[in-house]
Length: 194
Ligand code: G4P
Ligand code: NA
Ligand code: NA
Image (cartoon, rainbow, N blue to C red):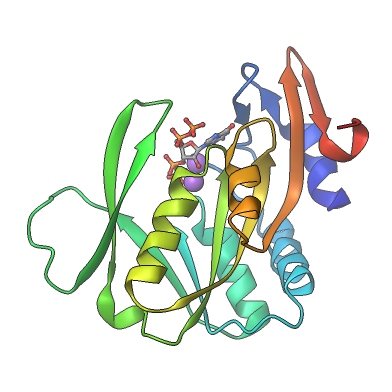
């Protein structure tokens, strides 16, 4: 998605060889106009795919998910990051391991929001090692629902998440795919041979 890639070049900062800061439009300040375009792009990318609802993870997945839900006319559910590990009644839960924080967090969705037979599109802001996406897939599967696809705003293709999800047979659509990050340099996948 050219508009997004242009914006990443303009406002994104490579903090290291692995971390891209995009708090000007996605992770802290949000650009609603860009989010509307992201919603339209996901609609196009998943044309012909049956989608009953969208599942994301708070907080940065919510904005692109809501705009996509608006385009598709379907509800959006966000998994909550849980503070308490007790009281799991009526909840679908999964663990998410964070490589950066080196800690495991539990996320949860109320069972009533994902029903057997639902076709669920998973959306998130970043795809790195795939921990969050896999936890959301786990929740959908536990509910007896089907994963319609995985929509990612920014995929860091040099980390293993995207490759593993595609190898597992998921329909993954990433609106920008980063090949590498360096000092003051952001390279996209379609600009490098691989
Ligand atoms: P890791 O695989 O790269 O170690 O990432 P980790 O699981 O630790 O993810 C920690 C948070 O950082 C997640 O958001 C994830 O989406 C996000 N993230 C991963 N890589 C990048 C990156 O290169 N740049 C930015 N800006 N974020 C990245 P979160 O904690 O769930 O936060 P939020 O959704 O509330 O914003
Ligand atoms: Na996130
Ligand atoms: Na984030």
